[in-house]
Image (cartoon, rainbow, N blue to C red; front, side, top):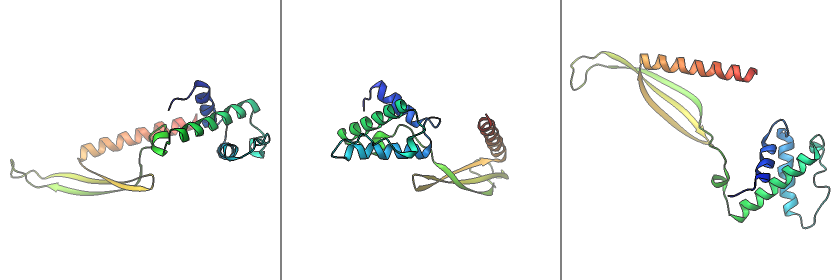
Length: 160
């Protein structure tokens, strides 16, 4: 779907939390659909209490961008997958593990090496899936260290 730069800028402004909070975003999207579905032009369509604190020029640009985007999506018979601008990775909801031992294999009679069976329960758009893998103690320690580093980075970023 080809969108002009002004429409893209308007949509970027609409997605900016410093310009539109969650409630004003929802109201503007609702207003955009209502203005397209209305049989008569209503000049007071943007006169909503949730939209009063927003700069009027920014509000009109974002409204125009949203209605243009809606019309383009309808024109192209777009669905959710074709208008999505990003990919939302699955979220981990649960993890389980089990300690196992390799006693022997085809080449060597005795190994006696512990390993972990890890199962991560993930959810993406209301569908759940399991990710299963095995790792040695060293690999698990490395994974835990990397996850701790990632958690520290997220904490630092959220404090800025």
